[in-house]
Length: 178
Image: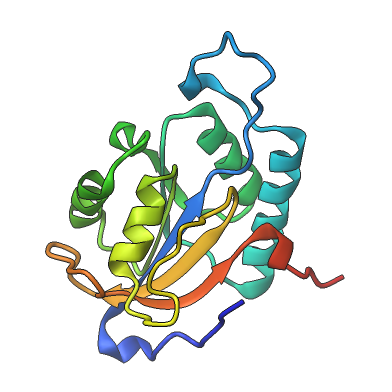
């Protein structure tokens, strides 16, 4: 899909990667939502996204993840060897836009931060941050999809349109190198 080079680092910009958890398994309807694991397809797609991130050299300095089993399993598969600091944030579980903005405002000041979470919150944050007019609204943020943004250095008061979308990637768009 859309791919651009990030601006030079001298502009004091930071990167944010929004990653929706991979496809979850709905077979056991006795499980609470927070306890649903990844489906086989989700496991494969999460590993594919992880390999793609490695190939592209996109390694977050820190990853914040929801406590849901499917987000924890997504994290394990995408970043098993990336060496990123990780933190489980209880408030990320099914977080709405305002909660996500608060989490960003309090996030550690690292160069590249990844959030692994859920819809509809991630989709709403994507639409809020995205400054692109051609892709200003997305109604579809499929499982295991990621949005890679460049944002101003200060995340205390992010406003609508403050982000520059570098790329939006779905597992079906990824072509891995041999």
